[in-house]
Image (cartoon, rainbow, N blue to C red; front, side, top):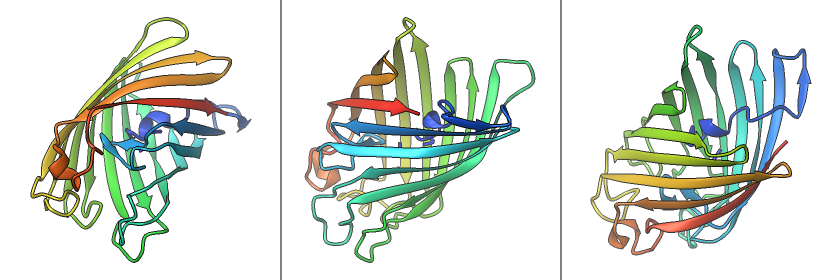
Length: 241
C-alpha cells in the first residue's frame, strides 16, 4: 500500500490476494513486502531519497470489513525531533460494491505511528472516504491534527488504473493537499500543494516490478531546503503473499 493510503495510498494495497483463508469469502489474510529506491509519501521523500524496505499484513472479513498493519523504514535526515527510523500504519474500514453496478465505496481509518521519534508529535490519525467506478477512483482524506501538529489536513485524490496487457499495467494519480498551519509540516508558510505520479508495473513470476515518475509543485525552500519534493523516478520490487 505505498503510505502511501489509503493511497493511497494506502487503500490500494488492501486485500491484494489471500495467502491463507478460512471459510472462503468470509475471512482471508494476505501479506506484502517491498523494496523501493525512495519512499515517497504524497510526493515527498520519507527516506531522505534513499532506499526503504516495506511490508504489511491485511485481514478481510465478510461482508467487506478489513484490518491491516503496514510498516516502512524512514529517514528524516537526523532531525533532532523527528529522528525515528520506523513508520507503522494501522488501519481498518469497510468497502463494498454498490448493488450490481460498477460503483464501489470504501470508508476507512488510519493511524500513523512513528515509535522512534524523540518526543515529537509526529503521530496522527486520518479518516478516508473513497468512491470508484470501474478503473477510476476519487478519495478524500481528513486529519484533525496532521503530521508535526499542523492542524486540519485535507487531501483530494484522483486515480486511474489501466491494464495494458496481462502482465503490464499503468497507474495515474493526482491529488491536492491542504494543511491548516504552514511552517510546521513545511519550512515555509506554504499551506497547500499538489502531488502526482505515473506508474508502470510489470508482473512476472509472482513479483511486481514498477517504475514511477513522482513529483509535486513544491520548491526546495518549502521542504527544509531539500530535494525531497522534486520530481524523480522511483523503482520498486514487491511481492504479495
